[in-house]
Structures are given as C-alpha cells and as structure tokens.
Length: 328
Ligand code: GDP
Image (cartoon, rainbow, N blue to C red; front, side, top):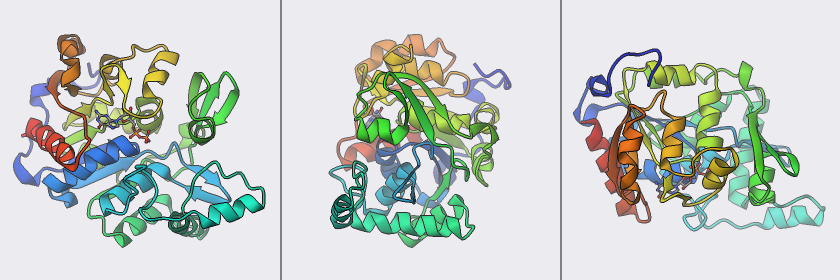
C-alpha cells in the first residue's frame, strides 16, 4: 500500500467523470502504443498525456534515437510499420545497406524515412533544444493530438548486466536478441536526471494515470527511477491503473517474462502487480489469469478482469473503453 497517502482506492479518481477526464499514461514501446491507439480513438486525444520511456534511447551512427517515443508517436500518427510495430510504414533500407559497405555495424535497423527523424532530433539537440522540444515538434508535425513527454530530457541509457558482461540495452535487445541471462539492470545518470517539464504536473493533475502494458523492467522502471516520479505516483489523488503486460505467465513479445525469472520475481501478472503495489490502486488482469484475482487484491489493489489481448483495432478500442469505464 501507499506509504505516503492514506486514501483508499475508492477515494481515488473521483474528481471528474465523463469525457472531460484528463488521463496520463506511462508508456514503453509496442505494447503501450497498441493500447494508446485504442485510447485515442475512444476519448478526446487532447486529454491524454503520455510519459514515454527514454531508457532505451541509444546513440548510433552519431544519431540520437528514441525508440519508445518514436513507436508511440508513429503509432498515434498512423504512420507506424504495423508488421513490425516499430519504424515507418513503406520504408526502405538503402541507407543502412550503404552503411554496411563501410563496415558499419548494421544490427540496429533504421529505415530511410526513419533516419530523417533521428537526424532532425540529433541536430536540434545539438543546437540546444531539449528532448521535450524535439518530441513536441515531431509529434505536432505528424499530426498527433495527444501530448507526448519524454520522462526526462537527460540521457539515461539502460545498461544490462548479463552473463556476457554489461551491454547497452539495445545491444542486449537487438544485437544479442535477448539471449544473454540478465543479472542486473541499471540506468546511467539517473540519480541526477530531472523529470521533463510537465511530467510531475501531468501525474498530479490527472484524473487517472494508466501504466500501459509494457515491460516493467526496461520500459516502466526507467520512468519510475527518475527522481520524483515514483513519489508523484504515490501521492497523486488520481486513480492509478496498471494493465498487465503478462498473460498466462508469458510476455506476448520481448523479454518481460525472462526478466521476471532472471531477476528473481514470480513469472506472472502477480509478479508485475507486486512491483507496482506502492502506487497502483487498480490492476487490470487478463481473463486467462482470473485465478490470480484475490491474491493480487491482497496487495491492497482493486482488480478488474477482462480480455487484455490486443490483436485487432477493435480489441484495442474495447480494452480502452473498458479501462475508461473503470474510471467513471
Ligand atoms: P517494447 O518497448 O516494444 O518492449 O514494448 P513494451 O515495453 O511496451 O512492451 C512489451 C510488453 O507489452 C510485453 O511484456 C508484452 O507482453 C506486452 N504486450 C504486448 N502486447 C500486448 C497486448 O496485446 N496485451 C497485453 N496485456 N500486453 C501486451
């Protein structure tokens, strides 16, 4: 339970109801983007603020790449490559192939159009703009109506300590395809990082905060690790709702289940709920895991059980509608 706030879950989220609700979401990449797309189709997108993970940001070919911000932005702009969940639709890879001729490492896939985003970002940062400025300009230019905030303007790359030594998260994730065993995860420069402008207010002023179905270790933990953010979640009067990223003990994609195991957590939705128990007051559990309901409720959270598998656009909208209904 919250250590700083004595409100019961029932007291939370009662400030406004109906369509005027302000919602803030904590988001990683693909899992989050699916849910957020549904959400923006069933509520006014202007009322949604997204705090995006930048722990998996990387500098590659001299460019600053923000994969989770870009996945969310491209998805909400309707220009994402739907087959992969990242990158731009109808992109080509000529530039990458040409870089290979110069023996550049080409394990990190970047399409030709996608390069433009990273060139723009890198150049703007070099000219003194912040990552927040850059993110706002890119999303506005692509017609996104929700607000996307990086968790921080600081560069705080995730380092994964593995049985093969320490790797940048993208080396572990993309180059080594999540094969090494994970021993520890840390975020560079995190102790001195500040939440980006607007992040704490978005948590404090929201009617509800949603923790998207994202990897808890590499997408949500980096956001929580920015000094002040976890405390803001504990203290907000908003209802804080987490959607499980684990269904029937498995991740739909990526290393979340392996990381739960390797880092000594229970490999289940309950293992994720346990990580969030100090700030979440409502956990959305998949119907496949209905048997876990009472043991998750024992963490002091309400638990809602529903289908959380988002395969089609209709699934995304339905999950979003049902989560919104929990806030009403
Ligand atoms: P990444 O940055 O691409 O790894 O994306 P995220 O961090 O956003 O999330 C990956 C997590 O989202 C994994 O743990 C998946 O199991 C979860 N996920 C992906 N799609 C879905 C879905 O349709 N439903 C649920 N409940 N979780 C999902």
